[in-house]
Image (tube, rainbow over all chains, first blue to last red; front, side):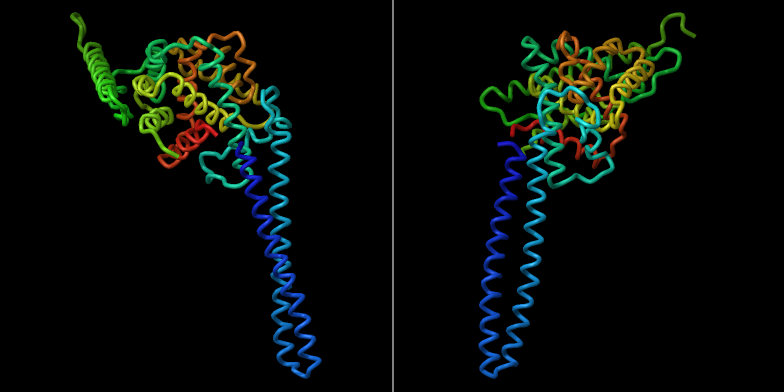
Length: 227
Length: 139
């Protein structure tokens, strides 16, 4: 079931609950009016008036419930129309008309959204992300190990981002790369053999770092003839 | 939603300026899952960056700008970069004829540079990580 289906079902349940409350209030109101009339005809005007006042409050509650139902139905309609139009797969034109939410993604400054807009945009983004991931994981068919095939390229490209290249060479100095924030691999809860696997990765990471440091040291060592 | 520490670290490195290469993390997380996370990261980054009517023009201009900013990054092939970005924006057919192995490292680079350019603070990085993990979770 998609997020929109779930969302729509939740709204449907809320509408049912409110309609039930509306029915109960309606019955109480009708019964209260009858009772007030009877009491007034029997001469108990004060008591009748008190009951009529309660009935009027019930009327206000009924109006609020009707308003709530209308709002919920409006939200349900928005979700349904989004499923029918904006979430068709494939992609194609990215113009505003076909991609109305391309610029509606919560910006870095905005608060996370809740409600139908968030659901719609999440579904739209998820579909786009999955299509792209499919290219690497399924449609490509033979994508091999990420670290083995592109690990070195990633290392090189990553080094270029985040620090300003020197104007002359376009390269990043080794001193600038020495204090980069690191996000280390954490040992995961593994079944048998998992700890050995994690230890292997940790050793690999340490060795890789050692090699990097050594390379940096070599680059920084003055060569014979340097002034 | 359960957060895997290594996946969180991979995504934080992607969104953090000057972070070390996450290729070790990618190895721990696993190829398929890494590509899935990075694809969603690129989609989120691209959707935030490219808005309005002339998305294609903006993508072309951005890739050209990247080429000038990072002349030493030889994996940055403009045609492949544009195809990846436009696929992330909802045009997967742009990737026809491109070898996934050729585009793999570029996926990482583009996601990283797009997010770094957005200069997210710590809270915004957390929000980005949550969003990507939510998008990459099975429905």
